[in-house]
Length: 79
Image (cartoon, rainbow, N blue to C red):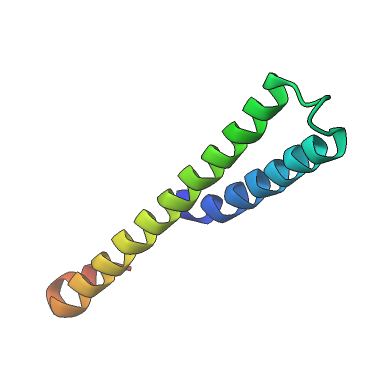
């Protein structure tokens, strides 16, 4: 399901962001290009998008489970 892909995608973006920032730090301020900074920023933003999606998915799952637990008729049909 899509929910199981959120964590690995977040992890991949986190690793890519770390590599991009490490490259910027190794290169120093004189060698840092606008493109490299923009790439690192894009990876950071993407990482937080996946984090937000994971939180929203968790909240939705908890609400769904809670509603199922309160309504025995519904919980019998939800697997």
